Length: 173
View 1 (cartoon, rainbow, N blue to C red):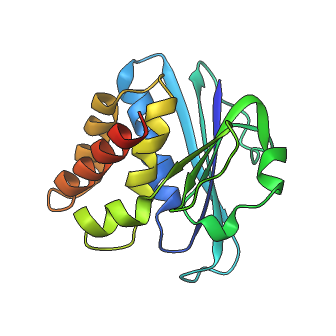
View 2: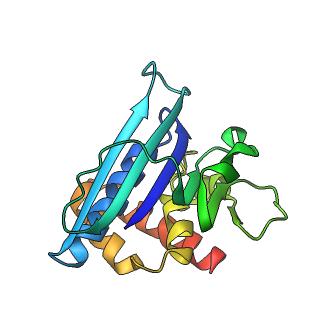
């Protein structure tokens, strides 16, 4: 089983990214099962939000929040601090949306805001960071994710988001 913990702010699309990743996993094979669920307080733009993706085969009965994850994803670098390392399983990775560099081999940085502004013309980084995650998380391919994006997102925004995913994947790979 793979567990992914998403950190973002309301309006950045953390839960949407969790749903896209989970859908991509289930589209891969009939045996794959996935859960994607959010956790947030006051529902307002800019408030801290967490979302969770649990991917596996067979029954995924555990619907509790993920405490230790294979991947911890930050859509906003202001939410990243030393506590993030406590949320990682051994061998896990952090995907951090930032223009800064972090000198730790467990942290993969992507300037997601730059890519989002260039391609989407908006500072919404969820699909950009999802592309960066896939460069490290080899259990799902960009092609698997493409199917999910085309099914879940509108025909108007899907192509741009796919472009953002592919750009981030290539920049990190």
